[in-house]
Length: 143
Image (cartoon, rainbow, N blue to C red; front, side):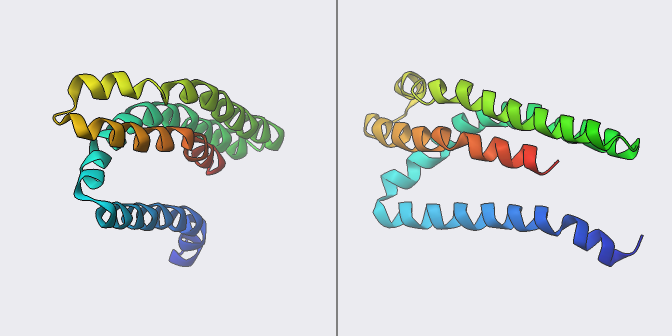
């Protein structure tokens, strides 16, 4: 296998990861322009969101293993079924993630070092969790 075939294979994944990095940078730049408190609220909110999103992303990521195994065995119908199962699992995870978007307020009220950060942390956390389906679905689609 030569380098060009590997590059063609990983290009969409690398582009998606670069897209995510650019979006995070722009997000932080806008928040820093808004206020330093808004920028301070991002890290705890992102960490809590990642704790939940990372779990579902890892679960859905396993569908890629089964897609690859089915494809390697020549079972294209099985690969499509595994891919569809990953997408359905992503959809179910959205139904489980959405209620967690409002659970962050209790967490932040217990552990926020400064009380004025709580509304900012909650707002950012809710936005990230509400869009969590797209992150999990992207993981399933990369199978």
